[in-house]
Image 1 (cartoon, rainbow, N blue to C red):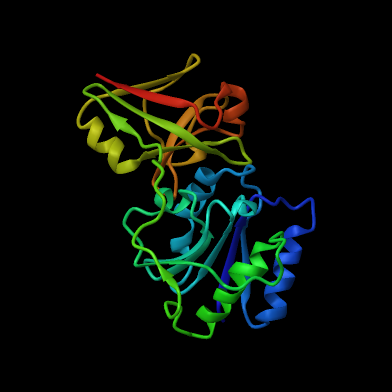
Image 2: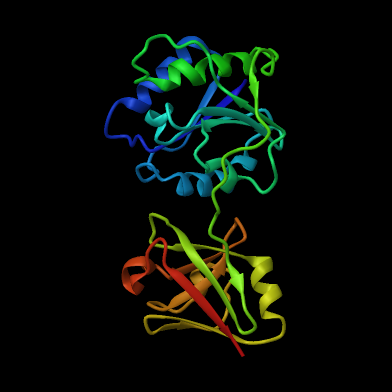
Length: 257
């Protein structure tokens, strides 16, 4: 059964995501639809890219990932279809793909299907859906299409190392208040070598990495690497974001001695 995932900034308060799902099911009744999230902050392509970056590879090859972030701006940012590591992605060419992928995609196609009406208030129906059908029906998606050589590029915030420091950013706060950074485990270990470290956030200090959320003392900041291999700041049975005062976008810096 073909799988289509949805990542959007539409939220679930309104009926927009339901309309999209109904449109897919009406046209392709045999597909499985998976909501990755509809709560990307409004127009936030970087957050959508980070979410998909650590999510898409958990799905089987040939999964189609629909990215619906600020799609109303298609007169400025064309909708493109790309193939990357055996997966398909459809979304606006606004820099999200350069922040999502580590290497250039295998295929880049600008979608230019004839639209149903001139208002373009429903770009999913007018642009995404025809190509979803073609992929699922195994049609040649490159035939009569505009094939591009590259995607629009934006820089993704990266962790960086100096002689005695490693700095990164918080890119996500989950529902438990855990703060997830962009510092990868291999980066940390390479920077640390055989030294000791300390992380101080507003007087909350940690100098070791634990393996489980339950390993730390109550009410104290703990550090661990999560299942994505990213450094996470947490608090045993507490909300680290609220109690420590750390938010998305904040910079954190390890000092090595």
